[in-house]
Image 1: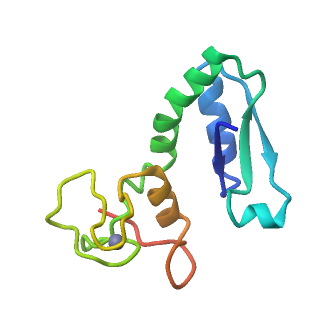
Image 2: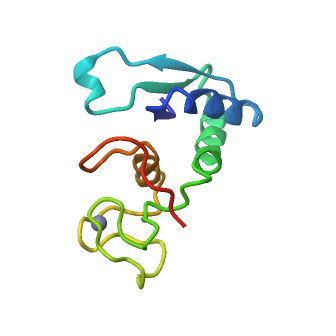
Length: 130
Ligand SMILES: [Zn+2]
């Protein structure tokens, strides 16, 4: 597995992003309910993971996730607070690890959590950041 996704709409974007770099991949849907609590639903797997394809795929993933999460550059709310615990991170330098809850607010994982509206009380999409 090279990366994973929870939103079905992310899957074709990841596979396309890899394919334009010459790396073919496919998706495996996790059907194990127990496993799903610990990982994402869709696992992206390389068709033929030679060392060079693996390296290209790993190097490409940051820019692929950046493109997918374009509207969520940080897991920070409109008023400059940590998405997870509401700690005011306005004055902290980037990249920011929230001193209150420890989340790296610039990581793809944190940005995905904010986009998917998870990680805190209440459901639905998180507010768009600045
Ligand atoms: Zn926090």
